[in-house]
Length: 91
Image 1 (cartoon, rainbow, N blue to C red):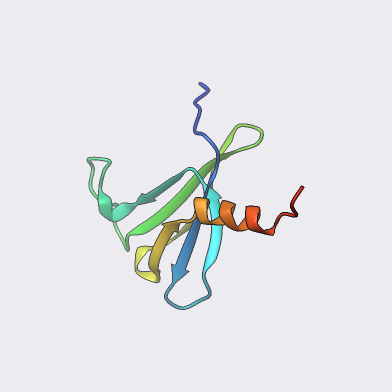
Image 2: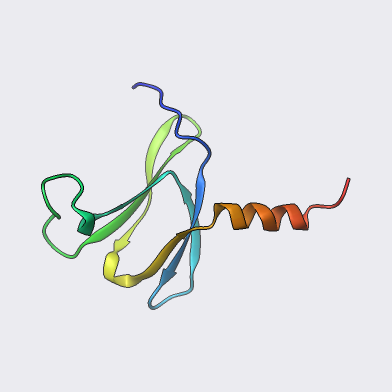
């Protein structure tokens, strides 16, 4: 397996239609409905997938769900970092 620098993990906030929001970390968000593969969307309900590279150099699927079950997926990495900086004690 070749090594690629994917940079630091990003934090995504998923707002679901029928359950509380959640945050996950990953490097890539893919949507079946975008059909970027050139083959079109797979059969069935369109899904989204979040993948990431984690320690041990393993590329993993972090989360998968139906696109219809999600209101938004936002990259909140910068906001989370700002909150962590505000919460850290002053040196």
